Image (cartoon, rainbow over all chains, first blue to last red; front, top):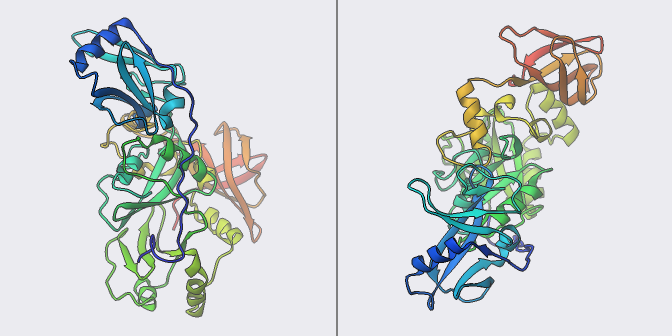
Length: 128
Length: 283
């Protein structure tokens, strides 16, 4: 049974989050780079943008192309015929972000500017 | 916290490396802001795929919110509210083994911060930067019987007011002393893991480590006149911040942040009254 199970213990789960309608801003360079990254899988795959705790400033961005998980809990934004998904729990942190793509020999790739962030780390991956 | 990713979620926000915690173990940890200043501290208990976190009474709601907001949509981790459901009894025993055998535990507890499950209870020898004691984690339904048993074997229940007096007199900082200050200033440097990579406050902690020592440090003050919590101007130390203060049997015990000197004076004069300066860790 143990301390965390059995009779006399029923713990409520914290689930409430602030949900806002997500608006994403992709630069032309970011749209072209996303199209290339999708490499023809636009029908079955989506770009997922999410946030999680960590990094020097408190939160970290994550971007990945994954198989379409459906709409349960997500907001779907059409970017030039490609679907970009943001989970409702991340909506207040990520709405309004500007996604750019920079091609440089060092440190190139997708870059995110977040108007909701009070501060960000020098590496550009952490915000708070 | 329930789910296989619980320890990982927690590890990202604390300054203490906890990802290597074995099952059935406990570890103290600090929560810091991006300036490296303490915003909460607590004890983490790793129990199979669950994590129990007991943090401070004043900051726990903010910490819980940080954990909920910081869990990724794809992580297996649920944050639950265990307020008033699980209690921690801290015991300062005459003999650790004696008290464990009183609870029917035959297993020898030799490792500090190892947890032993017995029925619905968890037992641990807890070591913090300041003291070592026995902890029993119990469900609320079992709290009264356990306290009755402890009283039956001559243990005395300490009131919050009495504990506050003991805490300050012994020089043990609480969250009210720690909040907004750097770990090194509170003698909590051992709870900062400089080898764990990025976490909130990591850049500041790395700079402090390379600098070698903090600028200020929490000290214990003892004197014969009451001392009000707050800022006080002094001649030798500039403006000091008194964070805890209590009068017991006519003697004032207080905790305050003082500037660090190479040869620190033994006394400080505050509003014309002299106080003896001592280290915070004074078992």
